[in-house]
Length: 385
Ligand code: 6GU
Image: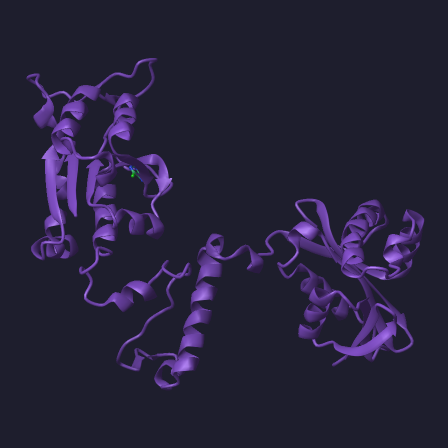
């Protein structure tokens, strides 16, 4: 891979000769060339910037030196053999996935801007002559692209085949599996009164793998919840006791949910689809009812009432667009917590054809008690105190 860096501070790129990138250079895997943009100026002051058209603060990098520099560096290289990386805080976020893509390219050219940026026409011309990637390191502002060129180079070069001695450490590390890395330990087993977690000394490889996975997930949830799949996120959903004012919204949600049930259980008469708003108002005031709201919107609900020694759970509903994120399970747990002392079992009915619901109830500890009327099954679970 050949890497060219265009900059007005070539000395800033000296670290490329060291450590990782330096080793890759010695192995002949990469060929790095750093160029001083001012070599393509023609005035006495070697000027690379000028005031912005339209006014405003700061200076803009002039197109002429960039044009000549790119002519020299790109030559007549075919468009599909070279990627020009322009570091800028307004670029796409640099991620491990972008690093993997760049690692497949034959040539990378870093165009490091300073000041307020490079004249847009330079970027437009680059896009005609090469693949253009405007890349940002993150949401903060640096004085120029040189640090980004170093960071991107280091992330890319270690992915070039043949560079890393140990390919496994590439697979195991942070971000390759979408999670942050688990904590690591080495000898001694006790240091200043702090022990290494015993599982790591157990020799039980399955237990170690499970512990590491759990630690990685916990860290990711704490530090980078944005990296977790949405199925494990229930951010911003509030559960509380229903109020009379919830009736109309609950009615609409109930219809939306049980129309789905109707399709899963053809021919079965579904009470929830045959009641009026007034019917709903009357059980809303009589039963124990919990509703879930997200950003003010009613997205779930469940009710329960005592019948003999059974806490009869019903009308567990989740807005169809939020299904599969554990909200139904959360509502079920909450209504179970509200069980009165007299009850000895939780009980509910669901559609014989509603396999998804039944799976969730089974996971929550409910057992099938058989078909009560055609198309409807009863499930129960003992109350444990
Ligand atoms: Cl790539 N360049 C500059 N100048 N500032 C940045 C950046 C890049 N990424 C984050 N901030």
